[in-house]
Image 1 (spheres, helix red, strand yellow):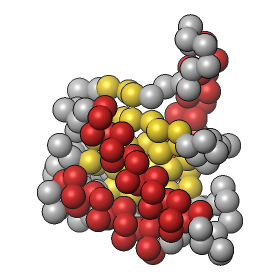
Image 2: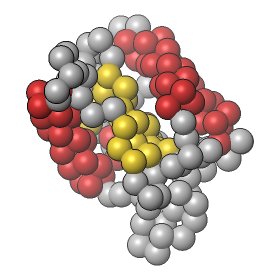
Image 3: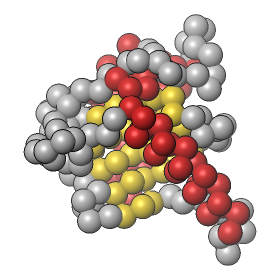
Image 4: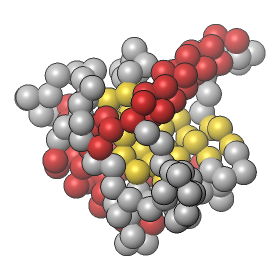
Amino acid sequence: MPFYSLLIINKAGGLVYQKDFVNTDATTGSGTGVARLSTNEYLVLAGTFHGVHVITSKISPVPSSSGLQVLEADAFKLFCVQSPTGTKFLLVTDPAHSQAAADALARRIYEAFADYVMKNPFYTPEMPIRAELFDLAVNKVARMVNGGGAGAGGGGGGVGGGVGI
């Protein structure tokens, strides 16, 4: 079950990391997975998702709701896992991906985030992530999930494939 993309959103709703793991041409839609978006479209997606997440946590009939956790579409599933600090990890996967598999995937990514980003003395919290060891760890996790073909689609670390905003 393919893992298409990872987005990390800070607690203010800003996109701090984005990485695609499949080859898809945004103009033709050819390749596997969902179409790749432009840097601006990823920034808009992050901000919009953050707003929807906050609203759903407020209007939920369940007390202390954590907000939107899964968005299902015909071509993908978007899982949102929020850390205790408010950082959101968005996993875009195949529609057949289960909640348990997404939780395990998010746990491995969060461990890499804690080890290679948060423990990095040169990283400023809430800023775009540019950590090569984190990129390598995320690519390794994606390769395991995707069966060896991950990372081929590119979109390096940080926002917009390694270009900080």
